[in-house]
Image (cartoon, rainbow, N blue to C red; front, top):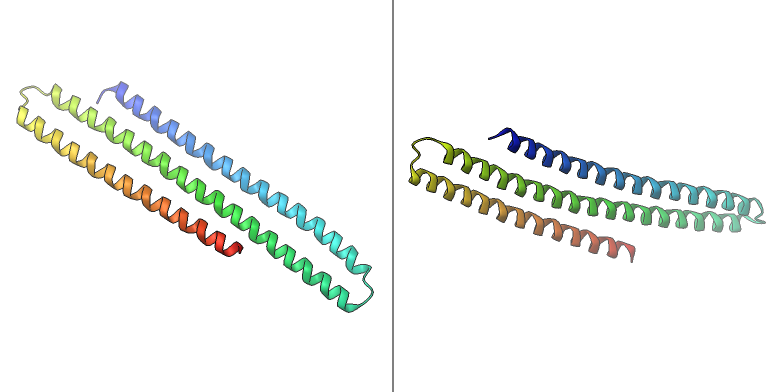
Length: 170
């Protein structure tokens, strides 16, 4: 393998790592924004609820206010948890896509490097080269099948998660 090929593979790996890091940062920021917004809303509602309770005339009214506040809080927490789960699922799908893309690209680059290496060997036997190319083609085909099955499984799991989340909302 030549230095240029190694450099190119390293560059591609660094670019993929940077994309994954950027995706992770963006998702973390989205989650933190959701949590901050939830905390702000809950604090404001808590203050409003405390004011309402202090102005209540009887224990039944206080109990009703507390119950409504608890229900509203639980609802907001569930909605926030669902949004965070959706962000996580979307991130998982994107990570899977990027990883699959990187592995497929790396596999292709590695196969090209091996072929170039064997072509450069002195006194090479064409049958050996053909056998190596067939073995690499089979390995690449198997990898592509695994990639497709994995992608299908991830998509299926995400659909199930979305259906479950939708049922939980109802």
